[in-house]
Image (tube, rainbow, N blue to C red):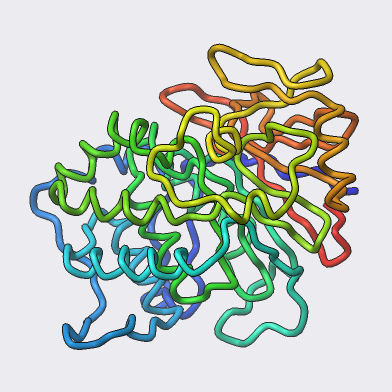
Length: 353
């Protein structure tokens, strides 16, 4: 098995656009977090949008080129047009609201179209916490390939908060999801809840827009699914489980809540961590700890081989627990001024990684 990839950040490297996005072959500048801090201010910014018919009932068709131009615009410091952002958030909410809170993602097969082709091959990539680090999100796409029907990405929660560019991460994931629903999948993390978003993201959003946009974001966030199964064998959720008897249907039946009820299944899926001892233990700072016997029972009862999660800062970017059955992937190498390593996980058509 190939080990999961570590993210190596080179702030002098160019972030390359697919050929159809480059202007006469030129590339846009390096993904540098200092650049974002400097440029993403409220004053003197252009806006990015796609024409929307106010009388239209559905989202206008987005081409890959339009999606990438939106991403390029927000990378360069432009803000999403307010009304278009509302439209994106409403369409995203409707799309996620129609999906069960746990669903299957098959391994992609077939031949890439010319529009979506890249050199990444057929695979699924799981990205852990990115915490508002838009430079890291772009860097992963640069070195690992852009999303396509044959290269599926799963962003496993906590793509917002802590970093300076939660809005950029959010917009990028939404426009890709609306353009190509099978290319991008998102699970919800414990930083996609109101109490955490209120601490930093609310200020970021209201400085650029207003309180109403923040409410639209909260409405969108609560519809995000909480778990995904890849190829019927790999279980992906942000944090952990709270019972050895947990079954798929329990997760599918979770109702949407912007602030999870303490002690609920949703709460534990967003907060729990693997522990060293068997059973379920209460951790006063982190929530529940689930032991090796709990993960073993859950995986066996549901016919699964591996649990992939995020949630915890891991110095080396990844960590294996519970006799090789629980894998933590951490993708935010510079969280709140701390510098370390980040990883992402590539899974091929044979479910090897």
